[in-house]
Image (cartoon, rainbow over the protein chains, first blue to last red):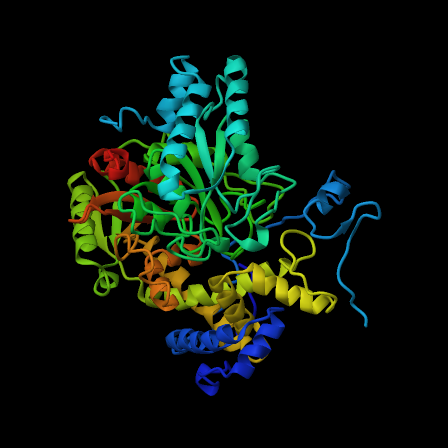
Length: 114
Length: 495
């Protein structure tokens, strides 16, 4: 198993706000690169709080010294020789792009610097 | 269609008929396409049907019988969930954001089905990015349940389940992150198998929860499910999480012998929230297993009651990370932001391209992974995941060890379309019996075990030891052999 040391002093959800304001929701949406309309802000403010209250019982489980499971797999050697192998050609990789420069071989995106 | 069963042989019988030249692959393929054309306007099981491609493939198989003689699925039609990549065939995951996406490569399972001679007839409807338990989160509208058109087929692989139940195809593939194969199989009255995590390559499966996702078969018989697992199982250099464990001969393991089988029953899990008719069907199934020689043993899975919140915390965190790639640059839809710059393009593309449930999960996943909340939610969930896994390990080991654990697949039969869409939490509870197998990485199968008074199918779920699908399928097959549930066609076939 891939393990991480358990945290020494786990934070409790009860230390946190159970309710989400529109500002909280906007902050999370910005982290997720997600624009939300006004109705979605209100809906998610309510539903995020509802889900986390529901998940509150998990906080009460005694997990002192319990290693977290990130994957159920036994750690295995997945190395392979570092050799060049055939891969997707450039045109195929660009074929689904909404805006690609096939000649130059680039994905084109809107202006990044003002 | 007076004799729906006789007219709809299993995958194995279909293959044998083609092999012995009693039927041609083209004839079988046309029949599947005709059935789809006749029923899909009502069922909406398919997002895409590839009639010409399928017929061309069937013709190629008929032309070269020598080459395909030993191919285990030569000429057998199969449908694939629309989140499994097919080179040259649109793959949408039932999302607007991938509505026009055509993968430039095949998933490993697709390569293996091709090599086995299977004929892919189309891509099935599902919840968007496999997130849902009713198929109602499809951007293209829900699939319907062949047993009752006003009810959901379950989800997320609802289209695959409906297509097999309605005899459009004898086989389909789905993906199962928290029950998305087993629950729709139960609600539609077919067999659905989630293999051990690591058993089947995920290469080419559009990722949802990478530590939980597995591809698996839908079929009308346990033997057909075993046949498909045999083909798609095994290590794949393109998926480092596939396991090197040898792949047993699953079909020869189906001996019908239950005399030494020990079947665990987690009775305390059944105390609450299980529909009375589902419970009655489960108890009758346990009696049948016992009558056939199996020993029933009470088992305790004390942490199973935390499985739903733990599962959703883990799955949403993984989803928020996996779905970051859909940003309007490399594939799919891009919103027009009229010169507002890159960040605005990302955010509006995702706003317009994703549906409500996907956004909800991205938001929750982002939150539980964010600084200050990671330890309290995500890490805590991973620790409780360890406890859930250990409960199963304990039940499967020691002097009281059981071979499989039996419980219902779904706490209720198929629910009405629209009944739960306003209440995500209520929808999540549909997964109460299925998510643990994903958290613990265990193989699990749903087999039909009865009907409610309203003629809605009920599923029996069996969970097995890691990489011991052989025992799991043996028990499921022995049960199926003693019952007639799988043989009953849904009413849509007699209309």
